[in-house]
Length: 212
Image (cartoon, rainbow, N blue to C red; front, side, top):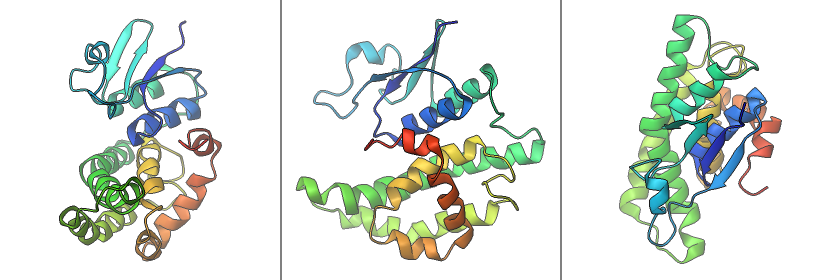
């Protein structure tokens, strides 16, 4: 069986979520760099794989796929290794809910609204856009509290076992924690802090760190 190919850039939280899933499943894969922020945008050949120009996309044995949630679920269900989706319907629904919250709220707030505006822009000489930063600062506590409120009694977001929810949320939190405001906001959610300490210590997180 041909090893899968993941197309994207290591700086992307969504590419990292897919890489985390592949790592946790023990799947060998090839990462083909695609920089969507390059001058002129992604290459035309990539748009044949992903017509919206987003990353990642994925191919395995001639089967092409895009959208992170579809990729990570395929990897979990299509390869040997630990199950990354709960078998219980309610726990699986909770996992899907947390992933949706991450996509709908955490990404725009913690990554684009705070990390990009407060951490990424200044060193490159770009000016922070307060009109984007301030609403994100106002919304971030709600984002963190929502995750905290939904956590089950267990070390991971959906209970006793690591799931796709953990792998989806972790790259976003990793960027957020680089912002000066993050430590105080996180301190109000001790369950999320404890979860993050466990998550950050996993070999998969170290292996997929964009700095490594």
